[in-house]
Amino acid sequence: MTRPRRAGVVGLGAVSRFHLAAIDRLPGWELAAVCDVREAARAPHRERAACYADHRALLAHPGLDAVVVTVPNDLHAAVCRDALTAGVPVCVEKPLAVDLAEARALDRLARDRATVLFTAFHRRYNDQVRALRRRLPAGARIAAMRVRYLERIEEHIGTDTWYLDPRRCGGGCVADNGPNAFDLVRYFLGGAAVTAAGIVRDAHGTDRRALVDLRGTDGGTARVELDWSYPGERKDLRLLLADGTVLEADLLAGRPGFKESLWHEYAGVLDAFGAALDRGAGDGTGAGDGLAALELVRAAYGRERTVAGTGEGR
Image 1 (tube, helix red, strand yellow):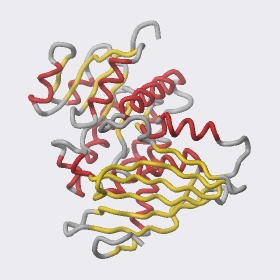
Image 2 (cartoon, helix red, strand yellow; image 1 turned 90 degrees about the vertical axis):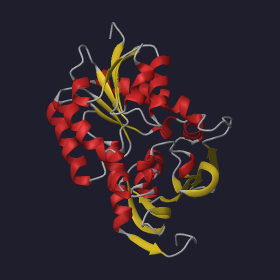
Image 3 (cartoon, rainbow, N blue to C red; image 1 turned 135 degrees about the vertical axis):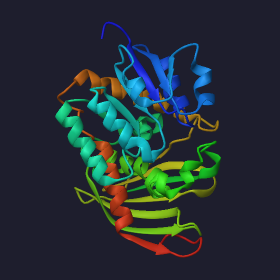
């Protein structure tokens, strides 16, 4: 484009600051408008962008080129549907939706409207993940991989307590962290299917820990370890190649500050979203990766073997 793309951000919770920083940081983008039902969340942005309490009003903002959706998980589908209906391209936080039928409907709508629907899988833009992928020898086959996504969720959500409501979140660690972890499996293995899942739930029925096994289309296997009760934070990958070579990546390496890695990852998200917009109505219009990750989430719950107590998930 000859002018910066004008973006709107719907939802000003804990994750929105990374999207807003990416819009400010990257050339070719500018913030046009923000939306949140809370006046206190809108107030800090009044001097630099139009502020709305209703996302439908934001979608009518003059000259809007795209919208970033960071509302609670249970609202993703409705906001995305309204944006696509209005012909506004969407970058939405994972998961694409909490209901698989709604996600599939969004996929159809994006294709029918030839409008980009892009899910923000920020971990695939992590510099350590990208470096690991570059280290893979040409033609190398991955025999097995492990993804660990471990944290204490209460330390990460700020005031966004909806994460702890399974109805709003779509579940627990499998529903919310699972999409990022499953996307990393697909990033390295291509297509994948869930073969087993062991899940630990708390007294409220929220899944706090899980081990999910998957198999890739070429026969490689993966184990995803999820934990919402981990003391601290660990996000890493381990690849075992068919020739016995082991390759590893620590997603937090070199960025010791709390959530420090997210700043560059979300810049990667915005770059990739812009590239999808450049491709236009050909590639990138359907839900794609977002729908595939949600299908794996639902498959994990479908294969769930509930494990009592706080022990290992299997």
